[in-house]
Image (cartoon, rainbow, N blue to C red):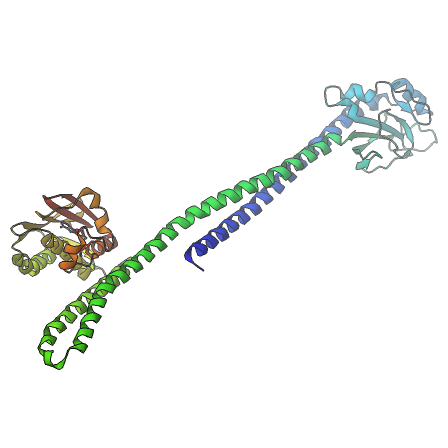
Length: 456
Ligand code: ADP
């Protein structure tokens, strides 16, 4: 599988996981909201029925007849109720009067029963057919033939003297029962509406989640992909850099092997070429290894206090011969007090030596290189300033890239691998410092390293 496919597959997998998790969260939230809405509607509906039943109950009870034939009296009290087993002419009902202002009055019905549970009277808008005898369950849900559902509440009616004056001479705890019911059609319509919203809304939301997951997975993969591409580029560059000295080395060895015995005096200079190429290769491989180690970012356990004054003094002394060979004046300027940083000594040596060596390398004979050190704002500042060829603004960022050279021919001739500044930058970053550059073509360059100080 090539890298493109691998990244595409990882992106798809990431997007699917993300969308899956979001789908579960959205699904559960949707279900929760659905249930909460249904529950709230249902409770409001039952509260409304209960409150209407309570109002009716309180206004009816004082008027209830202790009568031998309650239906006659009921007809007098509620002329708009239908009496059981009699022809009923629909009129505005008592329930309608009591429910005015509370709710849609046509959606309610009332039924009155005697204490035996036999139906006495009912409002004409009751759903048919309903049983003629009482089912005293407090709450019931009924369904008419047309499929309309009704919620019904049953309450006991007492009359002031019902238990003293009863028709059959027995004491009864109650006068009878009242049932208040209402249609569930608006409630069912609301449930259907919520379901419809969820059925349409959830897939749309999931579609949006899927699209954004794909986008977000792409964003998440981007830095990994870029880093992978950088690694690939690095491998290709490293192979390219290794190839030239290796090819030249092999060609020289082949030439030596083919040399006739008469020309044996040519062997030593050819071996010198082999040695030079071998050293170059070894140098390159060491740099590559160092760069890899630095980028692995292992914990800085090996860090020790390093005196930068000593480090700079040592290095300027060490490189003074190289500077003298190129007719360059190399000097340093150090403060009186010693400046310490916590770091990896050999890496810090490598950092400063790379900068000084570059300054010498890219400065024409007669020029000068000054290395200075100072402490400022809890930072140790090392500045390497030369009067060399300078670096064009367009190149100033690129020179820190691995294997990048402004003038490759010149750099190769002087033995540069193109990794010097990349290594310097990696070392500075590993020490939580910063490396900056100011340069002008033909005027010279100033490389500044700032590292966190131990003492001020
Ligand atoms: P090299 O091994 O080629 O010196 P570096 O990474 O050290 O590689 O430097 C990268 C490039 O930056 C060099 O090829 C050179 O063109 C430029 N450079 C580095 N230091 C200086 C300097 N002091 N003055 C001018 N150019 C410089």
